[in-house]
Image 1: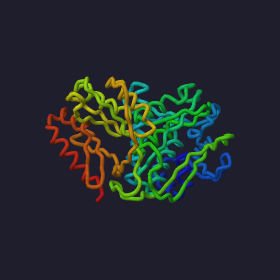
Image 2: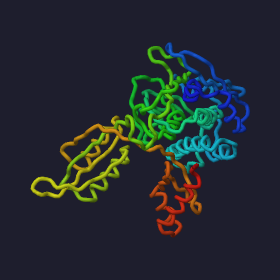
Image 3: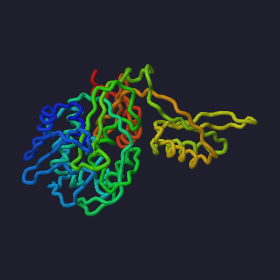
Image 4: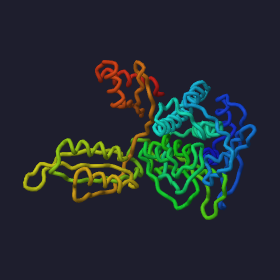
Length: 396
């Protein structure tokens, strides 16, 4: 459905298919057809696999237990080798690997095995590989730099999968949402409306979750699922446009965010540090503390948290639980985040995550610290090496 939505929004299907063809996977056909779902015009992406024509039900919200998926049990290391060997645009490969990395991490945790050893069933089949790489290819054809995702809808009931009858949201979906602290909400339906493949794409590739960013809208696309569900269009919507102002500028409307605060004068510095870490783990954009003086000259601190408005209740709950405060105050403000992307570099065989922005390379501290400990290097030396490699990977 994501792939269909991107093609519906203007991605050239021939250009998308040409990129996917670099995978050198045989016995499939990628097709797109115009359809309507509950009266909404949309595009249905189909991956047809030899000997078992397969309308890609992995993205359908009416999962048919009798449908033949043609499961191909591929360990992630094989899929990763396919992606690394293929002549793909760098950003397509990076995004596809990020999506499969997320899936492998969650599946590995579920089955208590290393991510590279995870054998994908539904997600390892040819159609799902084409879905993921095709979606990344469509993003590249459209020249999409930044992805923002709305909160993800999940359903109730069960779904039939390779491991048997599973509750919805499926364990992999729930794990992917938790991995990213992604906002989600429930819909009272027994149809599967959030699948591991779709949620992996959203949680791995979206820079943030929240409302539509300020932009000039250029096109809108709708990707259709197989079923035509009465009363609710079975589609995924994508809105594509250009930002009104350069990232990092304060011109134009910013992104609405909620600032939550508590004043505390009876907790230790260790508790405040733990609270900040808990707020970030719960999905806050940022969290910090500032020293203040309260009545009667009492030294105290204000603990602040900046979050998506949809996460107000969760972040406020963490503030109260961790500080013991009797109340929380909040205000809605705007922010203008600078465009950035994530990448990895290798320092003496150790993988270190970095963030790349205009004129800036930010090294992930925890990764650098782990590498420094393993190598016996000073932390600053590892961070300097990682930053230098980051500059080499960042186009001018």
